Structures are given as structure tokens and as C-alpha cells.
Length: 276
Image (cartoon, rainbow, N blue to C red; front, side, top):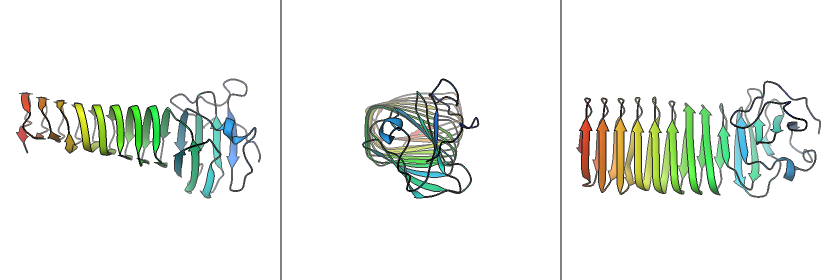
């Protein structure tokens, strides 16, 4: 396998630094099917707490011993890997899509950029941050953690199945969509901006909603004990059965709720609050 000079255009945000910052900090490699391994052994070189995926790449990410990516389909150019002190970047250059598989024992942060598509296998962690930017997608089959943070920017799509955690924080600031299936959490904190959409099913004991923009919330299949909702935009919201509900409406968005909660409401806009 041949080494390549570090490309200045490959900048990694959110903790991954640009090439050339510190001797030996950055290690760029090209990957092709049949490569025997990475310099110095794949286990040490590919172990990272932060992973970023970029370019037209479909990546299957599984929890297990660290290893080099296995290519199922090549792009026009070799897959590039770069490691620094903070994490690992997997980048597919060009416009032809590629498929690969990768195993990691643990992660603190996963970034999916551009048009990348990542499928996350069953995963367990103490704390995990999921960041989706661009027009790509991120799907998780089953996820268990003490704390999960989700951030979405752009027009991408994220689907998290069978998510169990103590605390879940969500920020949607673009036109993307987030779907949570069979959610089980003690605390759900959602901030929905711009035109992004959110849907959820399962149970969130305590819920806090901050809504601005035109994005909609479909959580009628999400039950809970207590919820607080503040809406400043035109997006509509549907909440599931609750015991208590506190609502403040400052825009034109409507709220529909389930069950027979103890209700406290304040409305300064044209939005309406009504039971299902």
C-alpha cells in the first residue's frame, strides 16, 4: 500500500484537525480491495473515539474489534483514511459511490457529512453524539446509552430504532427529518428549528419541546408523564398521552395532545391547543 501526501482540502471539523498539525499526528492512507492492512497494524491505527464519514460512501458500521474498512464496491478513486489525535476521517473522493464495512469497539461521536449513508449496527455506549449534516442518512438498528445527543443540519434523514437511554437531546436546524422508533428514555429535550420534521414512538417520561420555524412534530405515539412545549413558529405538533402538559404558543402552529392531562396553557399567537 502506498502512502499519500496529506491533502490540505481534507479538513475535519468538530475535533478532527487539518493535516500538518504536529509531527505524526495525521496519517493519510489509500484503501483498495485486497490491501493487506494499514501501516503499523489496523487495530492501533483505526481505533478512535470520534469518527467522521464524508463523500459518496455507504458505510456499515458495527461494534466489535477495530479493523480496516472492507470494500464491497469501489469508487472511481481509492477510499482515503486519515487519523489524528482526536479521531478518524473516512473520505470517499469523486462522484462514484462506494460501499464499505467497518468495525469499532466504541465511539463518543459519529459525524455523517455530505451525501454519505451510514448504517449503525446494534450499539452500546455510555455517551454518544450523532451529527448528520448535508443530504446523507444515518440509520441505527438498536442503540443503548446513558446519554445520546442528536444534531441534524441540512436535508438529511436519520432513523433510530429501539433507542434506550436516560437522556436524549435533539437539535434539528435544517430541513431534514428524524424518526425515533420504540424510544425509551427518562428525559427528552427537543429543539426544532427551520423546516425539519420530527416523529417518535415509545415512551419519554419527561419531555421538553422548543419549536420554531415551519417544522412539524408527530409524537402522538409517544407517551409520557409530563411535557413542556413552547412554539414560536408555524409548525404543528401532536403529542401522545400525558399526565401533565404546559403549553406556550407564540406563533400560528397548533398543538393536538392525547390523554387527559392536567393542562396549563398560554397563547399569544393564532395557534390553537386541543385534545385529540
